[in-house]
Amino acid sequence: MRNAILLAALLGTAGAASAADNGLYIGGSIGQSNVDVNEGLTQVDGDDTGFKFIVGFRPLDWLAVEANYVDFGKVEANALTSESNGVAVFAVGFVPVGPVDLFAKGGLINYDSEVKLNGSRVFSDDGNELAYGVGVQFRLLSLSVRAEYERFDVEHVDDLNMLSVGLTYTFL
Image 1 (cartoon, rainbow, N blue to C red):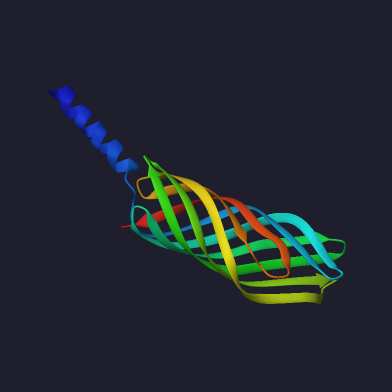
Image 2: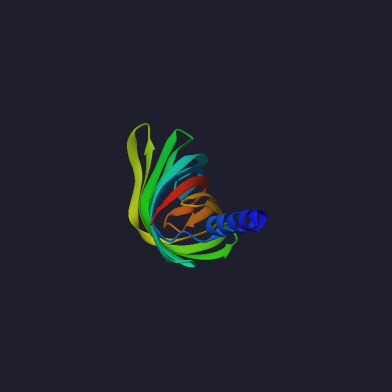
């Protein structure tokens, strides 16, 4: 009898750890960003450390709405410096597989991008463009560890993407 109770308790704990934790979540990620600006004579291509802050709401096991502040870092090449950042809003679709979520997301980014030559602005652009990504996260109760790849289709920037690893915490 004692073994049956112990087995039931262990199975209940495993089920709770693998169930999607729905509600409001916050988090952050850090990773490698890639920026490639090729506008006329202005050409900057390189990688830097990027980061983002995450706020989201997951009302269903398979759906969330998420907002991110993304900073792509500072890329320097050929005496030029490029800095890009923005706020992105996504719809996120999840496929829960036990304690792991596979996810894809699509939305928009409101971005600012600037290129400077020795501190003087050479090129500047801002606007709203498409953003999308894929990822995987491991959930343990309210804490999730995630890895994701995001791409931002920003006008006048040939390549703007980020590969990151981060944490989110869900409030019930």
